[in-house]
Length: 246
Length: 246
Image 1: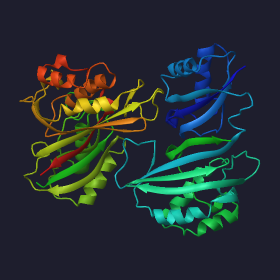
Image 2: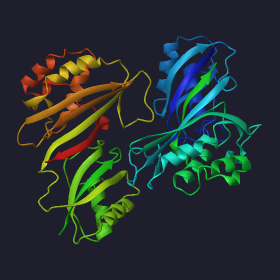
Image 3: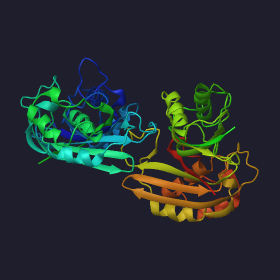
C-alpha cells in the first residue's frame, strides 16, 4: 500500500485537538472521515504532534496509507473537497517511502505563540492570539528565555497528564520578537512535553509583567517541579508551524 | 455636551454592517448599546463610513456626544467592558471640538482587500480573506489598476443601491502588493460609492485570471455602466483600515 505524507493547516478553535478519542470532532477524526469518503476505506492518519484543543497548525505533518496508488492532484483535491465544511486544509500531499513515519522520524517540532499586547481588546484575532492588555517588558522575557535553551530536564514545564517517557528535551530555539503590538514566541525542540510551550509562555509572561526576575527562570528549571513555574497559557495563542525531518 | 472621537476595530462577520437599521445587530447598534449601559442615556454614534455586512475595520472612525465630561480612560475601559461579548473594540477615544464630524469632515477613506491565492483552501483566514485557488497574474492586475487612479466617473463600479449624489470620485491610490500567497489591494479615495472597492476588486480579478486585458479596464470605466464591469467580490476580504482628516 503506497504511503503519503501530508502537510496540514487548521484552525483549532472548533476541534477537540488532533487526536481521535471519545469525540469524533478532532482533526485526525475529520481527516479520516474525508479519507473514507475519498477511498471508501477506513484509513488511519498518523500525525507528528498531538495538538491540544484550540491549538492551531500552519504546518502539521501526517502520513497515511492508501489501498492503491492515486494521482497526487486527485488526492489533494479530493480530500480538500471532503474537508470543505471544516477549518482543515491539506496544503500539500506527496508520495513517500513506506519507511517514513510522521511522528517517529520527526527531528524537530517548531511552534509559535502569538500575544497581542495592547490596551484595546482584540476582535479579528479572537481565539487566534492571546490578548494581554498590560504592557509587557519583552526585553526581560528575552533574557529569561535564554535560560531554557538547550538540553534540560523540563519537569517544571510538564503537565501532570504528560505521558512522555523522559522529561529531558532539547530546546534548540526560544526566540521572542515584537512587531508593533504583536509578540511572537518561537520555540523549537526535538519534541515537547505535554503543555511545555504553553507552560513556558505562562512563565515568561510572569517575567514580562515584572512578577519574577529573568534569572528566576533558571531556578524554576532547576526545581524540576511543575509548581515552581507559572500558569499554562491558553491554547488559542499556539500554532504548530513546522515539523522537520532528516 | 462634550464630543468624543473614537477609533474602532471590528470583525464584520457576525454583524449586519455598520448602520443601525431594522436589525439591532450592527456595529453602530452595538456601540450605542454599550454607550447606553455606560452613560444611561441614548447616545447617537456617527461613523465615517457605512461598511456592509461582513466587511471588517481596523480603523473605523466615529463620533458621539456624552451628556457630561468623563475621563478618557474611563470611557475607553467602560465601552470596551460593555463590548466584551462582541467582536468590536475601541482602539482609542479622544475629546474633540464640537465642530468635528466623522463623516462630513473625512478627507480620505483607506481600504484594503485581502486575497489568499493558493491551491489549498483557507482555514484560519476564513471570512477574513477571499480564497482564489487559480494562480492570479498580479502584474496584469497592477497594470489594469493604473487606469482607475484619479478623478473619474465610477458609475461602472457603483451598486444600483448607491445613494451617493455623484458618481464622480477621486481615487488617490490603488496599489496591489503580493507577499507569498497573500495579495493586498489598497484603495484610497475622498469617498467611495456603494460597493465600489468590491466591484473594482471583482473586475481586477478578471484581469488577474486573463479573462480580460488590463487595457479593458479603461473601456469599462468609460462605459459608465455597471454591466460593463466584473462581479462584486465578497465582503469578507474587505477592511476599512484608516480614515483621514485635515
